[in-house]
Length: 124
Image (cartoon, rainbow, N blue to C red):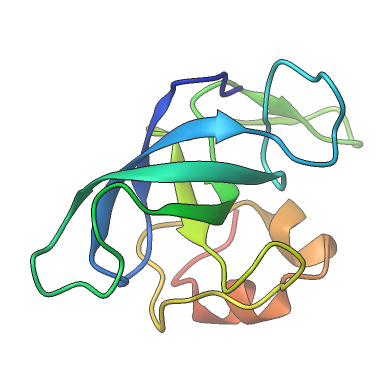
């Protein structure tokens, strides 16, 4: 459960380290973003050699949240941190990076982000 101005860790190798959530496009006036939501973020911290510089506005997919998420079977999944993966563009389901760090939720694969699921080392 992420809200406006939440600082989020980036779980891919684009060189971006931290981003801040500034919007949830296509969801109306929704207050929170959950696992599987595409969000608009601004880069707050990145490597000097990264092609995505500080201050750039990009779209990202939420892959982990600290707030527990209830699944259809009644179980809950919770992660240690909030993390996202930067996407090529808003409508694209392709990641900008070529490697994903840490686990992701299986709901990501179910939503059609098969490329991100394939790059992830483990899926919970």
